[in-house]
Image (tube, rainbow, N blue to C red; front, top):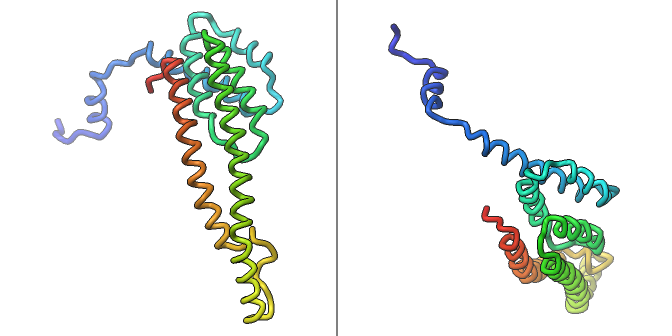
Length: 200
């Protein structure tokens, strides 16, 4: 008999003592189902709460705890600082999901209200920052434009927003602003994790 073992034989030897935990597999499948249900509801603009609740209510009662966990994880992972003012419909959907899986509706409403308020403040702060940055940078921009006209007979950019130096300046300040708001957002997300008992 050959002393050389095939890779297949070695792999079989390594895995023969591993037991498959069927309960863990089924639990993970239920959690994933909750993630998919929530993800579909959040990503489909036309999806209604009634459709989501119908799909959710078709799940057996004994599976709900794991499905809740999947929904909760999806809710938390979808909470992010907005880039435009169309965040409200999405936050409304997030609030619907959060309320559905929570025993304490008032506390959840408080956290979601905080998040919506924070997002509105963030967008206002971004707009204010943009206006201030433009006002601060405008004299330098005009001076650069005059120098370009004198040197080359034409200016490079028609507005301050097109100037790469201004864009860099603005991005640096936006990054600082986002970091401040992200810290508060992360704390609120952590509160939700604790409320829903999500450890991982």
